[in-house]
Length: 112
Length: 112
Image (cartoon, rainbow over all chains, first blue to last red; front, side, top):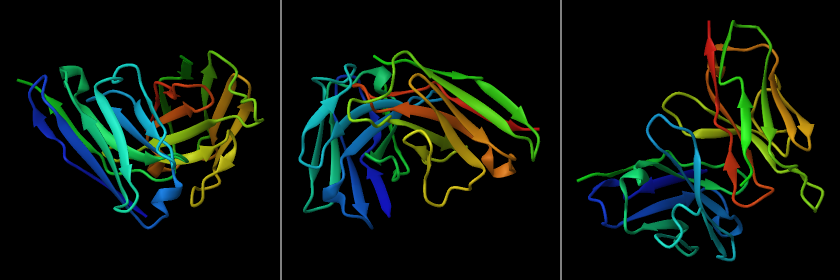
């Protein structure tokens, strides 16, 4: 089982970024998936969830700015981050809805 | 939102010592379907979180049986019976009974 995030980097406030999470070794289409983030030196913070049937839920802090999506044919989870703020700076992890599978995380830094 | 209060924030233990971490919820975590969606994660230094215990007391596959979980309603406990060096890191409880999903603030286990 492997979850591999990509797409992170340094971005200016107000700009956009798209994260990807590529899954292998399990039946991706059968699992709901989460994005979780962790600001530097801080705890875990839930960001968004997408069910196996593509229903979505967002944390209030990102609602209207972030969009979670999935492509089951490509075994890939996405997170579109728009209107980025400095407080969005964090490591972003994808995780399965049973919490058993986690990616290694990808760093997003929002700074001018 | 449900607040999960973890105590103690920091724990120092010797090898072989048994320790307990408390996770108290601001609301009952018993779901109307009869399940209690309270889980325990460990984040070792520099690593992604990993699942230890799910649904209060069920041991994740591959996790040593020195880890155990207990509790109900609003009070939950993770016990490590005989700490080993590899157990150092930050322990988080997470609840999925009530939206939005929330994490405890973490308990850092240090090895003396």
